[in-house]
Structure formats: C-alpha cells, structure tokens
Amino acid sequence: PQVWDLGGLTVTTSSDGFVLASATTATAATQACAELLLFDTGAATHVCPPWYAPECPTKPLQQTVAPLRTVSGELLTTHGYKTVCYEFPHGIQATVTYVVTDVQYPILSVSLLTALGYSATLNNKGGYLAYKKAAVVLTKRGTLLYLKPLRRLQLDCATVQKQIPDACDVTPAP
Image (cartoon, rainbow, N blue to C red):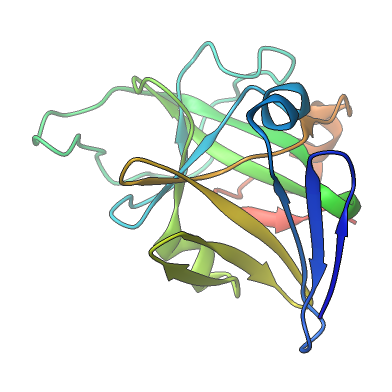
C-alpha cells in the first residue's frame, strides 16, 4: 500500500488497488464539506428531507413506493424524489436519487447499495464503501457511520434526472 498525507487528507492505495481517502484533522474535515450522508443498514431506500439540495428540484414519483416508516413505526409522507450529484475524494463522482420525505437529514440505504453492486466493509473504526476499484471511507461519529462527500456538484440535476427518471438508487456518474 502507498500512503500520502495531503495537508490533513490521507490518501491510501491498498495492495488490491482500492483508493481510500479520509480527513485526518477536524479542520480538514470541516473545510472539505459540512454535510454527512447517514449510512443506514436498516433503511429500505435512500431518503432526504424536502429542504435538502435545493438546487435539485423535487419531482413526482414515477413509480409506487412502499409506505415509508420511521424506526418507531410512524408513517412518513413522501413528497417525490430528487437526484443529487456528489464528488468524493480522488474525483469519484456519484448521483444519489432520494425519496423526499419528512426526515431530518439524508440517509443512504446500505441494502439498496449492495443490491446495486456496491460492497460495504465495516469495522470498529468505520469502514468503506466500494464500487469496482474505487472506495470511499466511512466516517464514524459515536455509533453511526456516514459518507462524507467533498461537495455537491453544481451539475444540471434536471438533466441527470431525465437520464434516470425512474431511479431510486445510487449510480456512478459517467
């Protein structure tokens, strides 16, 4: 493996070819991106609140979505869907199509990610999410795991949504 420290961002290439990156200081993490995407093993689908990513419009759902419930069993109202474009370390780009509902923050469904060909490796320090030969380190805060994008891409999200209008998944950007 090779390791580089780029002023608070550690980049590692493992022997199997995966590229990993993580912030090594609180300052670097804060400057990189303030938002976190909750990595949830119990979520049925990716969800986000209506206020999230206002640059990407909420569209009516094109397919029937099973009723969504909170952990305590309360029924959630669905408002539609939106696709958000992200950049992760090393230029990894991804689009996430969320069901827009009454949650507090964006939540990624691990079961949906693995069904789409992603693999998750978890350990007591966090872990990583991999797709093909690229991987993104999971950030651990307390008992919760998060994906931490470098930034949301200012792409024409309406164009992305036209390309995948019925998707409610995560797909690698072209």
